[in-house]
Every structure is written in C-alpha cells, then in structure tokens.
Image 1 (cartoon, rainbow, N blue to C red):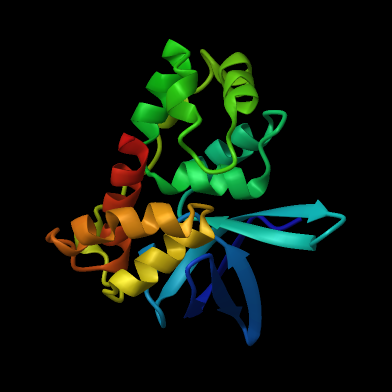
Image 2: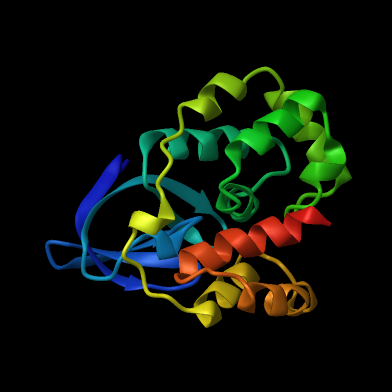
Length: 197
C-alpha cells in the first residue's frame, strides 16, 4: 500500500521511529532507529505487514535495497518481522550473505529468534540468492550521522531486538570502554560483540 514516507522524524525510540507526514504521525519499526536524527527531514522506505495480534504495522528502511533484504528474509518460513529486523540491525550484510552461502547454520543461530531449524531454512531458501543483492546495499557511515549519543539508548535497543538482559549486561563494560560516541555506533559495536560468541 505504501512505498515510502517523506517527513520529519518526530520521535526516536529503541525499536521504532515516528515520521510526521503533514501533521500525521506514522509509527514505523526500524532495524536502526538511531541512524535517524530527531527533527530531520527523511525519506523512509516502508513495508506494511498485517498480523492477527498486531493488526497493521509499518517497517521502515533507509534504502529500497534494505527494504528488499527485509522482504527476502520474511520470505523464509519461520522468520517474522522481529527476527528479520534483528538480523538486519547487525548491519553486517556481507557476513550474513557469506554465512548463508557457506551454510553456516551456527552463525545464523546467534540472531535472536533464530533456532537451528530456522537457520537451516534460511540457508535452504536464500543460498545463491543474496550475494549480489547484499553487495548493492547502501551503506551509511555512522560517523556522518548526527544522532543522539547515549549508551543507555543503545542498550535498550539491543533488548528491543530480542537479546536478554544477561547478554546485554555481559557486554556493557566492553561498550563503555569503546570509542563510540553515538547510540548507533554503540549498537553496531554491541551487536558485533553479541554475535562473536
């Protein structure tokens, strides 16, 4: 129904943004909410999803290609929107594509909500279909983003992606020791640490 929304980013939370389009606030779930800046004008590529529990929900991305990756992940049996967002939030698309191509089920089970059966299904459904696609994804350097720096926000975002409090607590000291300055940078570093083990 909707292809994109263009408006002002009115609110940013750990799991979604609110886009003000001509006075109407659209709640849009995003894999990287802190990549946006409150008050900025942005174009958000959206996908509308319907479920019996939540009704209509909007999911938003910074590029058409990122939206395409989300749809590819959703096409896999056992992957819902929340799991797809958690996978995309890692922003390591090359590693994701490589893991799928190599059939590395163990790597894929590191993402929240992805068990061995679902990981095997991802490999089965997407092997050979993701490599070229992922290489076209538009990358944005977080250093160029003017976002609100907050480790607290980053930790909340990691919890919203499905990681447990214990997992987040384990990496918090390491995050405090990094040179990250923005919530987006903290989230990326946190995801790298969480996916290591």
